[in-house]
Amino acid sequence: NAGVMQNPRHLVRRRGQEARLRCSPMKGHSHVYWYRQLPEEGLKFMVYLQKENIIDESGMPKERFSAEFPKEGPSILRIQQVVRGDSAAYFCASSPLIESYNEQFFGPGTRLTVL
Amino acid sequence: QQQVKQSPQSLIVQKGGISIINCAYENTAFDYFPWYQQFPGKGPALLIAIRPDVSEKKEGRFTISFNKSAKQFSLHIMDSQPGDSATYFCAPPSSNTGKLIFGQGTTLQVKP
Image (cartoon, each protein chain N blue to C red):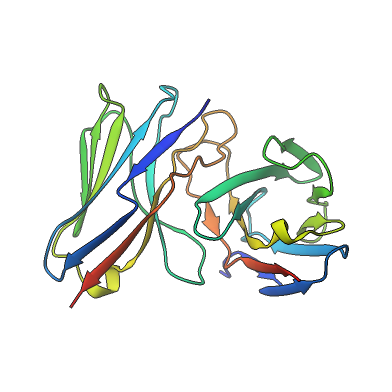
């Protein structure tokens, strides 16, 4: 059973470009969470999605950031017009059920560098 | 405001020693208390977790102690090994959506 997959593992963008980060959850998992880890900091929640629905986006910046989890295919975190402050590691995690006792399984992360 | 405060920020321990990391929380609605371990360049992975109906849980060299009245829980690593060198996060989940509320992290270095 493959774990959570994220690609690309490393992404370099120039200021003003778009970044698309992909996350494929573990088989059978329908809940996806995205977290951001800034250099030398802990992880911060960004958004929680179920198939075709955004459940909680309270951690998402109001502008330039969007996320989706379509019926088919991976979850996508999209950052438009990237700025240097967007440079960070972005992790997604998946879970089979909503109950809080369930472990979240993390992917290896996408490290975004904005030049 | 859901806040989780973790200490110390960094910790250096000799091989064979005991590593202790603490986490204090404010939200009394938390009902599950996990610790995650993260190695450089990797995603976090669940290490050990406790439910609030018990005060201690042990798995091998790792123990969680939970103090409900003080709203604190701690991770103890007995007989620390160089392979334990990593960053540790307490990260209780929100009870309604399951989103993890991460502490600031503790970087542990175990010297051989």
